[in-house]
Amino acid sequence: MLDDTIKLFNNQGFCLIKKNFFHKDEISKIRDEIKKTLAILKAKNHNDTSNIAMAGKSVLIRRITEHSDLIFDKINNLVQNKEIKFFLKGVLGPNYKITEIIYRHSEPGDSGLGIHQDADNEHTMVINLNDTDYIDGSTIFLKKSHNFNQTIDKIFPNNNISVRISNKLIFLFNWIKGKSGDIGFFSNRVWHGRACNKKKINSESILIGFYPSGSKVKFWNDYIFFSENYFKKNSGKELADRQNFNLGTELIDNQESKTYIIKNDENLYKPQNNSQNYFSLKFLTFLIISKILYIFKKNN
Image 1 (tube, rainbow, N blue to C red):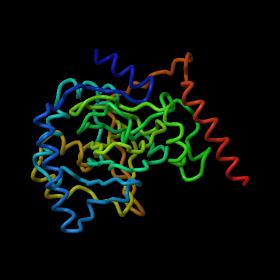
Image 2: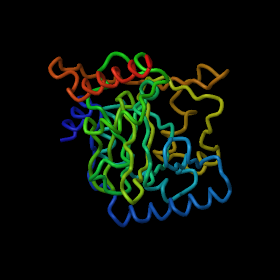
Image 3: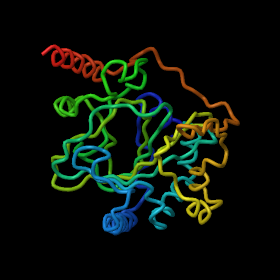
């Protein structure tokens, strides 16, 4: 069953890993904790909260596990789960690292986030904090777009396609449809963004950033790492050890940025793409229409 999930992820670039991992009462406690944490951080005007970092009408809390022991424990249990560990090792190898843990919500009236790609080798786990029966406010994906051999920035400027285009072509996109407590996963090479939110409630999730064994990871000098006290307090726990770049990595540059190589003790299996249905029709449709609109706008 899990092998099929890994195959599905490799095929389309995103998938639902586990349904109902967190039960409703756990999700309720997590959401209450986030609400309390957000209020405290906003009162302090803390750098770890922002309503502009992810565009539109959205709010985020960076380093959420730094600010909440409850949420740390919940996510630590998640990455220690037998099935989750099997999936992560199958996709990322044994020595994967975690770079960030962010809470994010999309508010009613949010215009969304334009279609883009992120850093090489980056992957993201999504914890749904409410039901995602509808696409509104959800992270959206163009299925199989990770197979395309050119990156967005080679085709469109600024590694971003206007959110107006993606909203007009929203019928071409998939999202991780499910219930609160479900766990999704995607490759950040997939062309992705955030749908506009026409609902009357927030669309909430926790996003966890991963890099596979053997990856090169660059942190610019303005990057805020988890604190030494955080790692000291949680020393020996799975989650903290995965986050700590002083463990299992080699620092190869410490000038304009800190650049690490994650050790790779085993060969990470890289699936061969099936020549049949290499790209999805929806992706190719989006690519062609977006390019036509871009050229038309540029010439007018």
